[in-house]
Length: 159
Image (cartoon, rainbow, N blue to C red; front, side, top):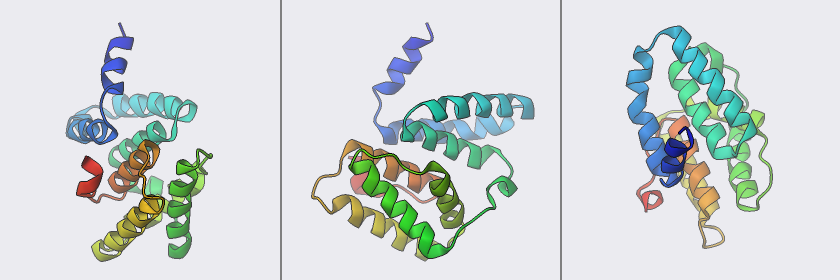
């Protein structure tokens, strides 16, 4: 029976899965602290054993449900840009992404001003467009990156 919801979720596009998560956040914030922590613990275990997209979903929920102090460790701004761009390139090439470095980069980028975030997203778009094909993996990671730094997904990624 547990496989049925999982199969239904797998049929959704990454942007649709993210939308469901974002819709659920207000309700999750109303849950008891114990329930939120148990959910995050389960999601973290699942995220660590699955793909980068599921790790990103955990990151998104954790950043919304845990104290901001949990995500205070940052890196240099230029390094954060490079880590995110390299992560997109590695994802497109089917290579492993350094999740710890990406987490620190997201911590850093999340604190940027809106104009700086817009420039960052432009860099990400240029990266995924470089080979003229935006792969599903690139699309998924870009959706996660945008959600984690609290910027809207570019319209072209919703298609």
